[in-house]
Length: 172
Image 1 (cartoon, rainbow, N blue to C red):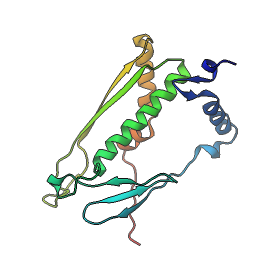
Image 2 (cartoon, rainbow, N blue to C red; image 1 turned 90 degrees about the horizontal axis):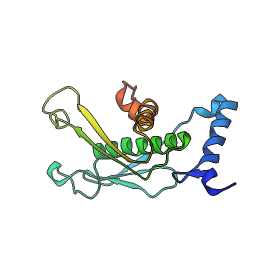
Image 3 (spheres, one colour; image 1 turned 180 degrees about the vertical axis):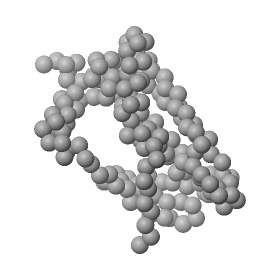
Image 4 (cartoon, one colour; image 1 turned 90 degrees about the vertical axis):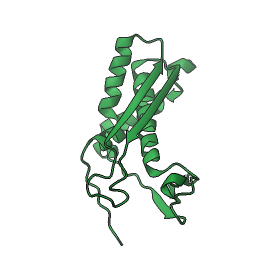
């Protein structure tokens, strides 16, 4: 077996196939739980610990009273969406046999600070998010359009942001 037969876009095709087979054999394996643990570090700084990785810092820009030592939570949310989309493009392109030479996703979101600052009541989150995707590939445009539709239809973070998802915040 050649290297190109086992990897495309640097994705381990066999590992993805094994996961698909495991879920097809046992539907319960598809239901997963993910966790993060956040520690406040004073002022507007905190850090999230996920699995065994180094902590990911968070802070607010100086204009919002922070120390500007790390991306703020809404910037991280945009990054999470972009990272999720990147995984979706890599996975689905690989399954479709599309080689990706380059993939870039530029995201922006519009946020009104009135509610966050306690100056008004209402929706404190983004009013809109835009992700502009640029793909460099020799694949025909119709294949890239199909890939794009597949990624939009299957992005966990994209679906979470685009749907009313119950969020329970409990004070212990």
